[in-house]
Image (cartoon, rainbow, N blue to C red; front, side, top):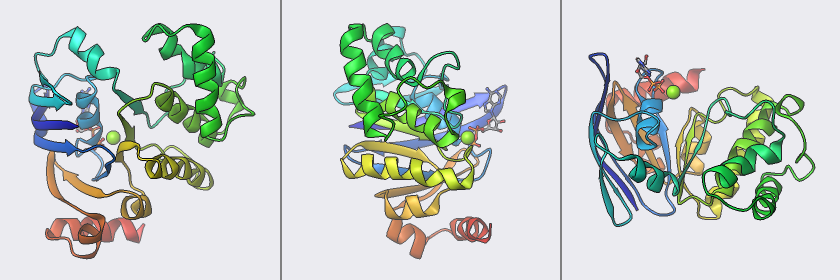
Length: 245
Ligand code: ADP
Ligand code: MG
């Protein structure tokens, strides 16, 4: 469905992505693990053209793109098929939950407001917020705000959703409700790429796990082989350190 080949990105001479390949098949749930600063966020941002890569090829469905020389029109075309869930929710503070969910549908997709409201309510229902349509972000818990973020992603009916550490800004007791929504989405066949430190999610929900460090993929595999018999010593060391936390 979506393939990225040899993506590279530097920030003022510092190489952050040093040639990463990523293949996403329909229905995949891919977890990306890695220490802070390894380039995980930059990778997701480049795939969504929130940053422009220095090099890289993208194949999305039947279309090919040069990730460095991509045109605005092509970015718009790609963004119609993707959605992004941010670590810090990225909600409009002055808009209620429903407005947050439908804003993009109305502005970017030109969907009539009436229709957008129906879609937006369905998306909020799906993440368990049917009684919070008209709440402002400050009236919602972090877990609820992130579920609004996920509802916004769902509402655009994407082919793939990218999650950048969706639970790492949350108090521990609120993480579960967000992971539950993500698990539900996965079980319904949504294609997802999730940067996370939640090892149980990576192990039990994803079908592929990638370990990144220093702008490179160190190891990737099925959760079973990745967690029970990692091939690379560094992977084992990282997993042990995470467990010790
Ligand atoms: P991760 O998400 O794995 O923690 P990031 O992709 O956020 O890693 O960052 C990787 C490296 O790139 C870090 O050293 C970070 O400081 C640097 N970096 C990220 N974004 C920028 C930017 N906009 N300008 C300069 N350096 C950046
Ligand atoms: Mg990050």
